[in-house]
Amino acid sequence: MTNINHLRGGQPLNTTRTINHTKTTTTNTPQTTITEPQHDAVSLSSQGKAVGQIHQQLAAETSFDSAKVAEIKQAIANGSYTIDADKLASNMIKFEDELNGL
Image (cartoon, rainbow, N blue to C red):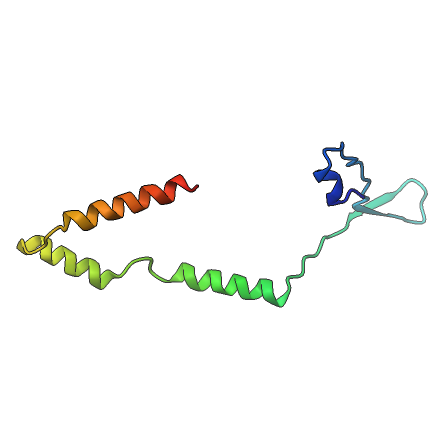
């Protein structure tokens, strides 16, 4: 079997592998052959199950603060919402700097 050291060395990989996925059963009559597929099984560790549960919890939660959104909508509607241009510009520059790191 190929190990990870072959990947780092730039050497060609030998990926030839034979896997038999069927089980053959022959009955008493020599002309009848029944082929039954074998079933694969997967088992998750307790850590894997915990990660799955966390993922489900995060997916169920809202991704924004609906109370804050309602407050901003109200401020825009009544004309009291103000924009801090310096803070906006600073956040835009910060965002661009983060994108450059990707």
